[in-house]
Amino acid sequence: MKNTALQSVLGLVLTVNAVGCSTVQAINRPDGSAEYLIACGADLVWSICINQAKEACPGGYTILSQVDGSKTKELRVVCSRAPTPGQAVPAPVPAPGQAVPASVPTPAQTVPAPVPAPAQTVPAPGPALVEDEPALISTPPEGRAEIQKVINENIVTIQHCYERQLAQHPRLSGKVKVRWVIDKSGAVRSVRQSSGDLKAPEVISCILAEIRTWHFSAPPKGEAIVDYPFLFKSVGF
Image 1 (cartoon, rainbow, N blue to C red):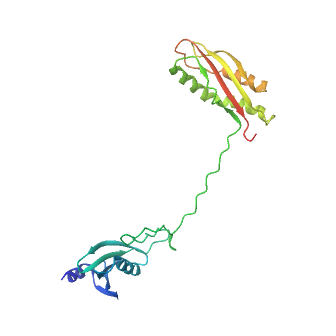
Image 2 (cartoon, rainbow, N blue to C red; image 1 turned 90 degrees about the vertical axis):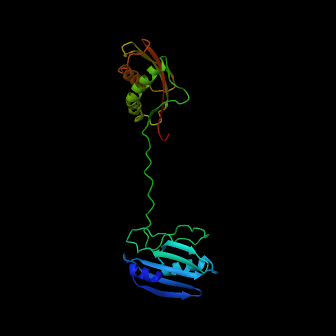
Image 3 (tube, one colour; image 1 turned 45 degrees about the vertical axis):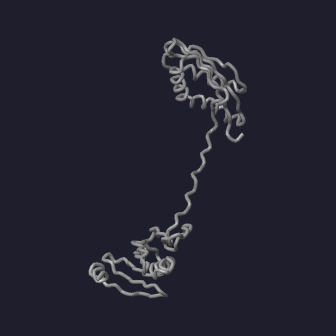
């Protein structure tokens, strides 16, 4: 009675194979996919049913139900459809207790080529801040952030001072520490080199001239003194 009702819904049931104490029945599904009901003796191990499923569905399958009855073991599976070009093929479902094998591409599976790493960008020669010698800014913390923002916005002009001389002296490198005073209006009142070992007067003069043109927000306490280090190093030397 159960098989008759199943036939009326899914179509004709055909016996495909009988091996040892197991049977494999094919069920025609309305969507055209292949479904199988595999019955094994209750005293047999599940691997026998699983092997029958693999033979019936060589392209892989999905387990719909798995019943361990007192007289029989029943495994119902539906086979995976043939993949379209470029579609991934599902891995076979392992038997209970079976280790999941490492993924191995099937012949129909498209394996993407490894994506090459993007080309490394080598920074252009230019200035960098000295990490082990922080800038000294004599103003409250809220004012320091604003001063650092202006420096960051204008750092490219300092870099240009260095790069112009680097074309003539490829191994030019060194440190320059510059001190300047910001008055109550935010203008740079005075600027000078406070220390450093960069042997390039043209670069230093250019840096001082550029900083004189910078404009800051009014310092919280009327004026601020900045002692700021720049480190110059040519990439590749």
